[in-house]
Structures are given as structure tokens and as C-alpha cells.
Length: 274
Image 1 (cartoon, rainbow, N blue to C red):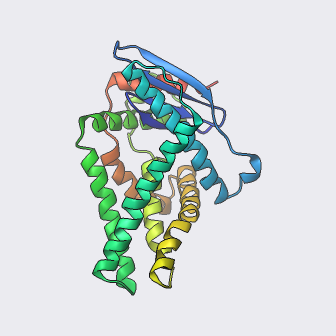
Image 2: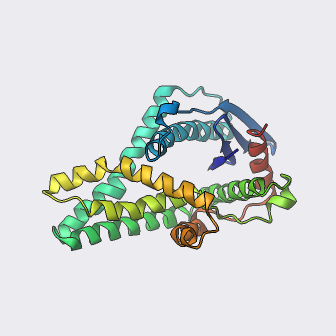
């Protein structure tokens, strides 16, 4: 069964179609695990390009719950998360991403060169620079570095599981912290696709800007299918070429984890396995 995951505060969340588990290292040094049923979309959405967009929303919903629960464990609180809080968190994050990675490059490019192919080139180039700059800047934080270590632990653990090896620290630590199905690779694929797709939008300024927002679900759906195929055909030379930039980018978003962090990641994965 295919398993995905994400790093959370002092821990890792692992998820499959049936359930997800969040494991964290508490301040007392113990590993605490929480399990929940995964949020899944109805089967009539399970079509290529559509499933990626819908599934991303459900995955994000579970991911936000896991992230806030993990934060509460470090704050020694047990606040019950409401659906309203999750919706607000997702909405604010989405608007922030639109503002930084869509609106800012668009209007900056328009200020420099307002029309023609150079407008699209500038728009895409500024977006890439902002994205790389944002990741590089937050990676300087000590807390984010720890988060990236758990991200690396998540990848190593999933790779060990996919290789059908026993989930013990000595085995898991042998595997690479880079993985083709990573969310970082997905974001980079979406970034490149957006440059191509946005260049196809013609018309007045307002139409170009509105088109960029309306095309985001389409781009996400295409990006999902590319990442899904890259995981299935990872040994194909063409696939390796496509995912190479995303894997390179993981040099920023993943760090080598400690044995204790691997223990947490293993506990999380075991939480979703039968």
C-alpha cells in the first residue's frame, strides 16, 4: 500500500488511504503517537487530473490537523481543533501563497516589461527566484532545520518500507533522504508548469492575472499525475531527468536526521501499517 508523509513539529505524519498517524518526540524524550482515519474523497472524483486537485485538499486537511496537534504536544496543551480553525488556517496559507508567488511576480514583471514574451519570462523568473529565496531563507532557522531533518527521516523511512526491509534504525539510515514523490518535487513541477501554462494566457492585464489564479487547480492536477508517474517509473531515464530539479531542491528542504528522529518516523509509519 502506498504511503506518503510530511514533517511536523518535532515529529512525522504518515498517511495512506485508510488512516494517518502522527508521532512526535515530547519534551520528556518519549514518543507519542496519534492515529486517525484519513479524509478521503468520493470515488467519483478518482479520475486523472481531477483526483490530484481533490486529493490535495483532503491531504492538506489531514496535514494541518497533524501539524497543529504536534505543536500542541510541545506546548503541553490539548486544545481540540475545530473544522472552522482548519478552514481558516488553510485559507490564510492559500492567500499568502497567492500573494507571494502569483501576485508579486505578476505585478513586478508588469512594472519592468508590461507585454510580450518578456513579460512571461520575467514573471516566471521572478517566481522561481522568490520560491528558492523563500526556502533558503527559512532553512536558516534552527526550528526549520529540525523540521527538515524530520522531513529527511520521513523519506528514509518510506524508502526502507518500499524496499521491503525491516523498519529498524540501522536499516532506515542507509537510504537516501531524497524521494521523487516528495511535496517539494511536486511544488517545483507546479512552478515549471505554471511558467508554461501562464504564457498561454493572452488578453488585457486583468484577464492574465485572473487566468493565473483559475489555472492553478489545472496545473496542480497535471503536476500530481507527473509526480505519481515519477514514483512508478523512477528508473526510467526520461523520468529521472524530469524529477532531477525537484530532487536537487530537496537538498534544501531535507537534512540528515539523527537516530532519535528516525525512531519517531518509524513509529509514525508503523502506526499506519496493518
